[in-house]
Image 1 (cartoon, rainbow, N blue to C red):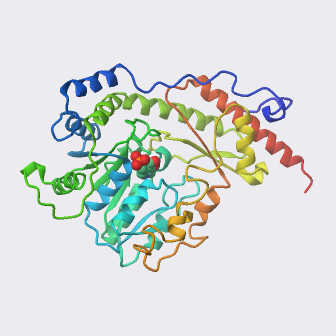
Image 2: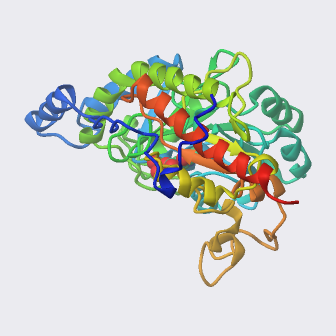
Length: 417
Ligand SMILES: Cc1ncc(COP(=O)(O)O)c(C=O)c1O
């Protein structure tokens, strides 16, 4: 795709590449309303007395072909629960990715576990197995494999490392509904996996989360963990470990059930639209989409592409500003606020529990810890990609990216050396 070189950038007064407005987004409809009404009519919002949370757990587990789902209040709660059920002793090290949401790390700190950040692969921004291997120590007790932006992490390599080290791997699937690694659904490849239903996810109910497992013991501990360790199934109230209240309500479950009905279509459309954009970007100089392994299925929670500064001579910030002016909303700084998560003050100041350096001990998180992750913020552009967009929306986006990329590439090639 080579746009007309006489076409000026929108930033410089030219026409916008996005000529037609994006269609309005409507995520909730008649089914959500009906199921919510059923909850209100039943006059029961508490999961233990209701039916909707149970039904959602059954259906979500069936959707993934796993034996058990335990629903909870958020993705943060789900990752926390997934870690808690593994009964890792406080002070244990858990290897995780340096580009993720804070919610994927919060539970780790609450369990007294020490986060050990591994670097990401330059072509996918997913956890780099080579870096994980380097981070293994005698204190490593688990690995969290986060599937970044809807693209599967290298699960064969990561589960092999876990097996060799004798430690479990957990999948964080908050961003990865319907995504597949070599045909296998993300969320089915480890003993326990975690999902989020927050506003930004493929499906949402305001806030919510799930864990999946095939193991009866893990299911039981998760059911206790999300409910203060009350043994409701036995009618006993005698907690024997520390557990928060992470219950999902019937209201959340009603909406989550309605959303689940739409999930196959959402996943299919995002995959189709994202693949179409990938295809278009292959013909544009200096921009490369996330690399999708042959045999994998990307479900584009977000659409990410990498800039080649050698070809474009532009920073991610400059590219982003020009693309926004074309009517194509995007960000230059991924979703973490422009830094790898270990640059957050909580890790730099080791202030999870102010007044103490618990649970970090003497661990520090210096600059340069994960060079690929640190450089990513200068190279990657992040955009939404929604299932209700049309093929024409994608083609106009591709045109906008091509226009901006060719503009910078031409300007860079013409610049005196
Ligand atoms: C990878 C990942 N893990 C965990 C979470 C936390 O989910 P929630 O916001 O539902 O607590 C998120 C949310 O953005 C996420 O992207």
